Length: 102
Image (cartoon, rainbow, N blue to C red; front, side, top):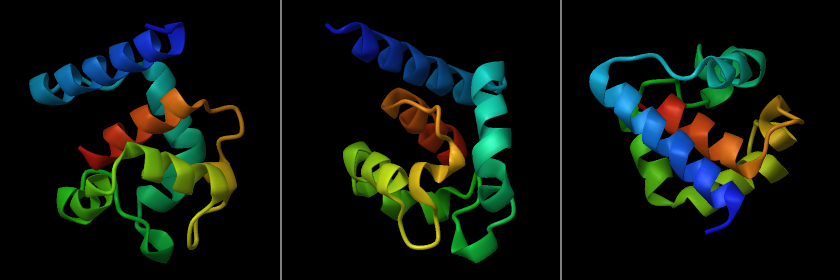
């Protein structure tokens, strides 16, 4: 298993455990969310699915993580390319999507 896959699995597992147990996301992830995602996904501006709105995120998650990460990286509808997170990796995008959708 590649190191990036191990990291991604660890991050996603941590997020799932955190959301199931009520703990907050890792500080680095919350910082990236605050810096890059919160402006739109915190308020729903320009029809962005709001953080924690499972109903809005459900159909998107059904598309699969590769599609969603591709949308973030290329830009999709009103979202700018890379979702304003120029230093994010694919694993970061996946973790952020999971974080926002819970």
